[in-house]
Amino acid sequence: MFPAVKEAIENHQGYSGSYISIEYNRGRQELRSVSVWDKQRSGVCLAPGWESITEFVMVERIRRLRSGKRSKEQSFYISSLRQNALYYATAIRSHWSIENGLHWVKDVSFREDNCRARIGDGALNLSVMRSIAINLFRTREKQDVNIASQQRKLANQIAKLKRLMH
Image (cartoon, rainbow, N blue to C red; front, side, top):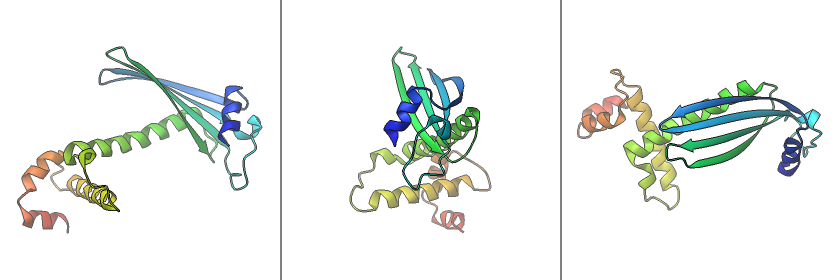
């Protein structure tokens, strides 16, 4: 499927529109271009079982770091919706901001990237436990969302930890 979609995109067959945004964050500049192609107008025939796909979406990210280093990345998506490029840009961006935010908290507060569990389901089980802990910390009444400070406050207070879980 991908070669046919890529060819349609390269030849602008079924092009519906684009949305471009520029973001400055943490010393880097990122230009994000989201483009949409209509499957029917593109002429791409998909395998049986993929009939509900109506659009192809391409996200191109060009990043420039403060150091001057540049990178370019393309991601492709399929959709059964009929939406404009702004809709897809917003949906994709919010998905990744949630994903990146959770990963960042897991890595910084729980050092997940340094976890040595590699056998069986150990890594997955520990990751689920970390997610549960983060959600419990975030739903506390005091709304102290600093996970690290909550860990320090509750580390040796078993009774409070038990109350937190009920």
